[in-house]
Length: 331
Ligand SMILES: NC(=O)c1ccc[n+]([C@@H]2O[C@H](COP(=O)([O-])OP(=O)(O)OC[C@H]3O[C@@H](n4cnc5c(N)ncnc54)[C@H](O)[C@@H]3O)[C@@H](O)[C@H]2O)c1
Image (cartoon, rainbow, N blue to C red):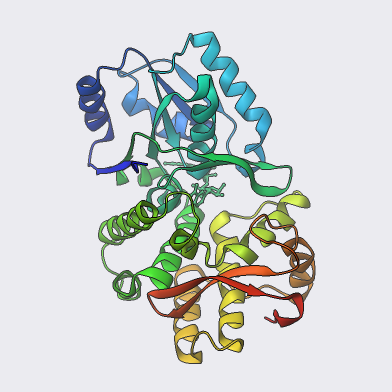
């Protein structure tokens, strides 16, 4: 399966216009959330005025939103060979990709990420989907966007906490796949350079293992516990940012990597320090861990009574498919 091309640009509107002109799309629809409609869509208004706007936030990443989007696509008379532009953060690109993948058995879509999180990670790789109540990403498909158009022009309006949240996925990618990227983050390289390296790193891992059967699972570092942490807070109607959950998950999984002998104390501490420096995130409390443990066994990536982890074995190098029993997991 061909993985989406990445296109880095300084003007998303110009790049999109020429790309659509070249491909000859008859109709183009935008999917935005309320914020990206206000802050990002205006640069595209000459391209199309057919816009679907959904409420912002993780709590709306539910199946009913897919139905709403499909109803609007039907009302627009959208066809399979028309184009849906998912303009937003990871919530919009996950939801929009999923809607596109099932609308008339698959309509064309592209992702234009507007958060740092989506530019570095979420918009790339073709994992689409929604949460099922509080269970993260339980329903979804693999569906590659035709292209991922990345322009940092949209970051000007991004709230500060969204920047912070994005560091989690970038540190994760460096820690488990790319020592050079990790060093760039440590040394405060230019954000555009870090972003490009991270996005390309993710794309190349996806290219090797589109359906997440092996190597791609490395990207799950921090997510086994992170998703359970995120699910716990969704469950009690106090959603936390995905990146914060992943950071908490990485902190905990680094303890596991250390105690089980996969990673040296020095390297684990180096990764934990970078998380703390960039994100000011502390390890989860004992009370949180008690709740998170209950949910871990409901995580979709796990089979039987074993929990599966992807852990770094050195900075920039990881191992996936590490199975552990409940009693072996200590943070
Ligand atoms: N599919 C994948 O491979 C993958 C990978 C990582 C994360 N994800 C998913 O991504 C989601 C998190 O993504 P996110 O952090 O981008 O969250 P998000 O999409 O909820 O965006 C965060 C907030 O920023 C607002 N926003 C977006 N762009 C803006 C802009 N330019 N200016 C002002 N406000 C803006 C949004 O409206 C929202 O309120 C989670 O659901 C997570 O599961 C998916």
